[in-house]
Image (cartoon, helix red, strand yellow):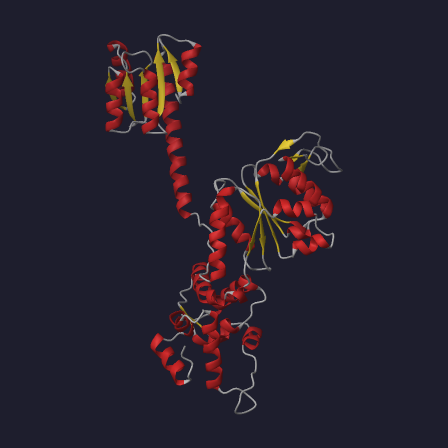
Length: 451
């Protein structure tokens, strides 16, 4: 790493000059000073890649130079040099973060090799740091979309419980976003730098689930040729989501309860306790209280998991969030398909606002992906929606004047419904309807709907 900046600190002129001469010949930029105070001034004035400092100096010694260098530049490397080579001073220097300990008299070739290795390590650490910064800047933090009262309550609760490290039971229908909520809790917690992993408890038999969670010892069963670490070991320090916990067999529930209580477990076929430090989140679309009453879920495990419960509302309970979700999904799938769809036709939005979404947000996501994929222009039209949704969202209604509702009657009823959904917020209602607030006011006044 020629061109690196090296600071030499030594109160012996001959030793200092020899080191300076050797390192300059190697192509390094060298600054040499004769005391610790001058070294600290030099460090505060600019960043160096490597410091080579004598250990024993008057006033400010090599350990103090080392500590100040590391405080200013955590990735800097420091080689401590001394004529008093003892194990105690070597250990002290290494504990403070020194790269290496060099005893006088030293071999010049050894110095060259040591300097090169220290600078290579410094270069690697800087590169790793830069890569981490790039990864963090590109890392997409999961986000819950929605401004409805129900979603605001969910977000507020998540922010409160995420740092506590307590167990959380996430409740909600299929497709409401339970795993997303779990990921957000993980991202908001002190465990965010560690792994997050979700496992579907209903997708495995009891034996496979035990093997996945706990791992197994060699020859624990036929075909177990070696030791296998389970997920509990693989995510030490991280967060585990047990999805569809209501489908976990009772015998596995006993084993899970033991893990939570003892903070340790046994591999399948093992006899040694393995300590575990993870946060456990659980999710289900079942009523676990009812499952407990029916004898299908252990009461003690239910109370262990249900330290805090968090219910995710269905999409049909927060329809005012549909326009926001649509815009978010439009951006996501535009990027994925390389499209530039910018708008949603008013009729399409009306259909989506009327539809009940039995599949919740996941169903809306599928609808939007399909629409973006099919769209040829820059607007999502009715024809881009699945036919069954078009029909399901627009049921035949009976009006006053004939067997069917007139267009005007449909409009009045729809406006009234939208206003109810948004708590009579006319600005928000006008935005959903795709008209300005004045036009909405006129329609309300014309049909005696002002309030």
